[in-house]
Length: 284
Image 1 (tube, rainbow, N blue to C red):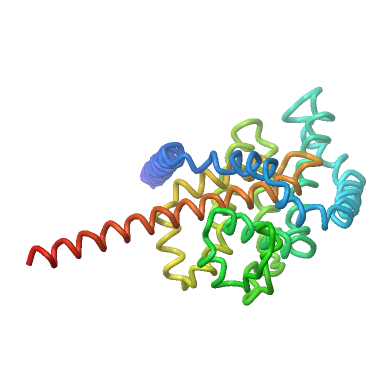
Image 2: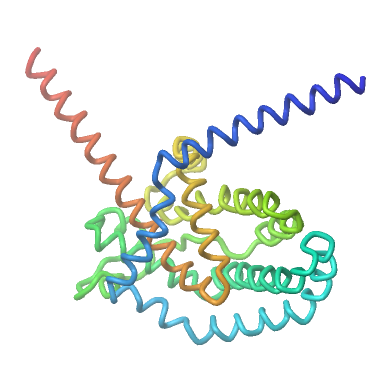
């Protein structure tokens, strides 16, 4: 029985390793991991997109100070003690960096839920307007006259982002101990977080497309590797201490740029298919 159990564990491990290898390969080939970086460049070069962020700076900075102070006061020493066994003399520094990273993640989760959700929606829609996806944006909000994409955003027809649920925090807490395993544990932690964060970045896109759950899952499965690549890159940016909120906005810009490119691909395919049908009819 022990031998068969060991073989079973080995078999499962090999299957998971193969699945991870395929997922990583798909993510690398997709190039979707570049969209968070493109989001940074696009955000910095389009000043109108700064408006949603600047309107939320004071409350998010205040929340960030509170979260970081709380985390250092209550979690630094326990984590430093545990990391003494894994990091040795570097435990104090490693624990400090880990607490800063944790604070950034918690700040992002809380801010997206209570402070900046509307601002992120405006940013996403504004980017789509700047990429001439007006018809798509009009499915979720009114479009008005204005000088720049953000000024054109009217009243929301539907509220896209789900309000706070404990699942994100619970999932984060469950995965957190992985960080105590040097290198490998942190890599797995980032990968698991990224696998979830990728599809979540397009929540607004799914709503604008009016997709039901089955349609969303089909789309996500088709782009599984790409979403994981995007999610990992986005998570790596959002755990950067003191800059997580900025990167939450630039990641949203990147997600919107990707959505606009997906729409262009669909339009091109539909247009090509339509032409082929017309040619077939004329041939008849």
